[in-house]
Length: 386
Image (cartoon, rainbow, N blue to C red; front, side, top):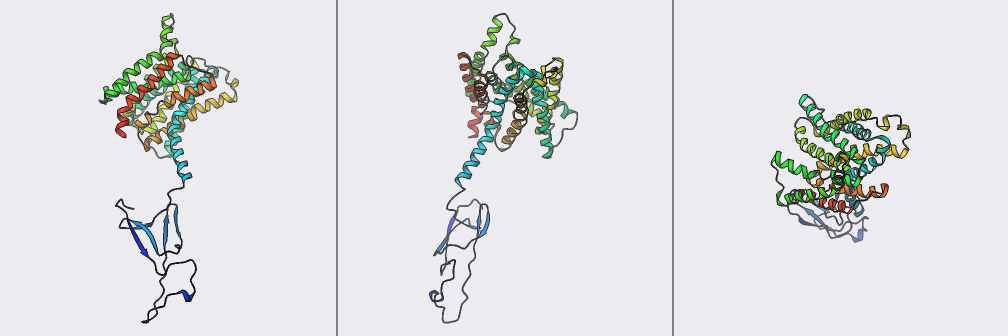
């Protein structure tokens, strides 16, 4: 139906139609000039779910809505409320699910790393998930990368965004909580904003600039444990917060690299292959590091540990990235990035429930400041979309 303003068309029907033919005595008399055949009226009602032939109820007139080119019966009711509510809930769940999977995967990784080793978990999170993404993209007809430029870009992308990001993350998880680590990692939009301004000339406005300043303060509060470790004579490399900070910077640089990589390869294919390629050096490091899982202790893993590893790889990587890209094709990445705060929220909640993790007062303040700063940095784009 076209977008022209609707009008109402009233069609009188005489005599009224009824499901049964009235008795002959009730029929109106015919004109003297001769018998006229009684008109037969047939209506086809086009419904949302299909079409059906239904005789109208007895009435003197039928109400139609049209645009000048067609006419349809006025629907007294829209879609079933239950159906509409279910659809709305499903769309909301799709939007939020990647952040839920990422946050809870941090908790699952934190619980299983002591039994398997950090680099084994990092490799297992990347390689199977990347293979699933590649297989899915191939089934959807996506083009495989070709040429040295494409594979070189994907390899560099994999080294930074996969190997460094996941390697630093799992190393840091050994020494900090899943919730705190998630807050630090999800501060990467602050670095992305700076790099995007330097390389692409993007502006974040005055509110975004204020958000950057606030974010630095928040990160300093989050890094209090790392600073205190250094003051006590230990090296900063022994701080989980510092490793998480490096992980966030790797992810930020990887985010900037996406535009470059997408020039040479399909972005979905590049995502899958960069996970596979980035997972290989982590697997080599796991072997050289004598991680417990590869040093004769893998049989000691319980069924819960195996489920945690599977959840981390399948839901925490393959499905979460797939759903995230699906949401991106239907909406805006800026809108999705405004939901970044959900990841540390889920990680903190489930970390408290399953691992008994808590924040210090300084870290709570730093986490709140960092989350507000992330929103402020994205404020200009979010308001621009609305």
